Length: 151
Image (cartoon, rainbow, N blue to C red; front, side, top):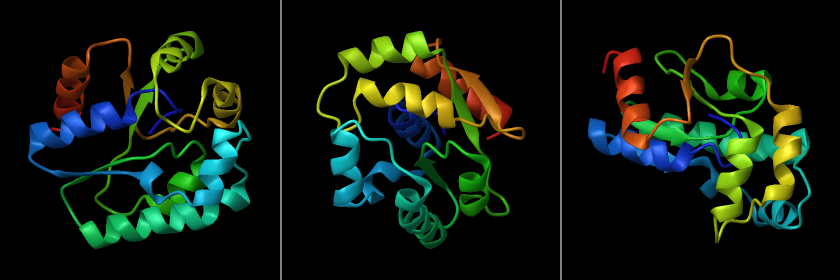
């Protein structure tokens, strides 16, 4: 979990490959309307997110174990809807400046740099997650997660 541009997809795919697990990206479960709002630089509301979170939860339940799901899950109430027994949350933490620099270089994604301030405003850092500094390389982050989760 983490704000846009924190590396959820990149790290999630690398972690899944390292573990031989499946990978899914919660962005793929957004409605067309949600993607249009984000493309226009309009932050999503809790109402916008509820059907999306339900779809992400259903996909995780269907997949069962051994799934890495990349999902922003910015608020505690979102994580409460998503997390079920046996699941662990990994929080990819980085500064707004570092993430803004990454977003400026990113292409072909509907969530643009102008949404980043609202992401940080909504972010409620988790109390019970594995917290990883995104300033490290992807390989270092993956190894830190594997060690922290004893996988």
